[in-house]
Amino acid sequence: YQKVLHLRPRPIGLVQLPPEVLDEIMKLLDWQDILRLRQTCKLLSDATRTKSIWINLFNASNSCHPCSPLRLEHPMELYTAHELEYLVLRRSSAEILRKSQTKLLPRLTRHFPIGPSDVGALTLIHGGRWLLTASETGSVSYFDLDARELTKRPLIPNQLEYFPDSKHGVSMTLDNSDECGLFSFNLAMFVGRTASSSPGVEIFQIWHIRLNPDQSNGMSLSATLLSAFHREQYGKLASFSLLGKFIALGVSLWGQSNAHSYITIVDWAVADVHNQLHPGSLSYPRMITHFPMIPYDVQLLPGDRIVVLAEATIRIYHTKSFEVTTNSPPIAFHGWTEYASPTTWHFDDALCGNSLSRPYVCHNTNTLRLVFKSPQTIHGLIIPANPIGAKPQVVTLMELDMHFNRMFCLGYNGGIMHSRSPCFRMLDYSWPDDVSVGCSNSLSVEFDGDRFLQFISAFDEASGRVVVCNQRELIAFDFSSI
Image (cartoon, rainbow, N blue to C red; front, side, top):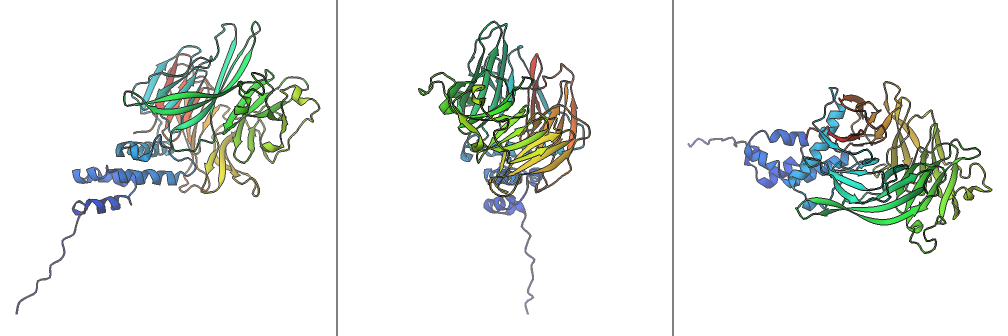
């Protein structure tokens, strides 16, 4: 008889699999496994650079960060696999660094010389690539921080003439309603000038900023003025916030007898100086209410709400309860009661911070979230998106190991704090319902050089970038290892 041979099937390795099957397998892996495969052989290394894999990992990263997802500057199909890989790995690297217990050192530090009045305000656009700086006379410039060398490029020209004997001020804020994936947003800018020997002026402007391809196959920013209106020269502007068609101003009257601070909300298109109903005047309609303390920060929220932060309280108001008037303060206050609008919620504590994070829209929990601090705690404020029903709640995100009465830039899961000395601390914290809750962490960084300007700094947690400045230079730190 003939003996039947039983042959074992030869195992098939990854390199023998059809490319489409290998691609599907790699979509099941996380980014660490993808990078390990890249070290095995050329065939697998090439396979890990497939765009479909990095689209999948980009979406997975955003699924892990539903309240602070990465945003694209243009449609996904225009990105290369390498560009998507860079975005995913840069964020992951920045997170790993914030959670580490080792000494914090920047991967890259860049310096750009500035003059005494060149930078009165700055902001990092979400994603950390674009830095906007505003001078004391209202000119705005931008830097592409993804470029190796820092290059200053003009965006908005001067808005006021510089008077040597005057005090100038400038501030900027971004539109809180910007959730679009493509790169386009509105910017609000305040420019002011006061002097005893010349007329003072306070102007608000709303600009639309867009990303455009330039002639050198790169990218540039452009700005279009949407609205400009004057503010009454009464009290001191303490804070402002932009959401859609409304801008909210927190004005301090602290120290003036028989006067209270106030919050005013304006439809910036209606208030425009070119509106024929009130050409160039202050008689535009506004919603207004008294506030008993200095409104250090205000943040407009969807659902006709506003959050106000003061020294010893944080409060939420329904803006529809505000008085509507065309009279500018102080005329608008004649006959008013001391507190015109009731709060819908408040949290009282000995707050020493002076800023809130921007609002984060969390679609997975149908909530809005902000971050703020009390003397030794970083708090999270959770606000139901539907104003009818559950009450807001405050949760603890991180306990600080000492009393910090300093400048804070707070993001959803991380932030920085610093004073005037050339050093800062980078923070990492988690929300109670985060998918992967880790221990909070605080890492210190110290530098040689001039003292920082305390209230001019920016932090972007998605990229791990920090920007500070002193009297002589801008300093951009990259902490991601990518």
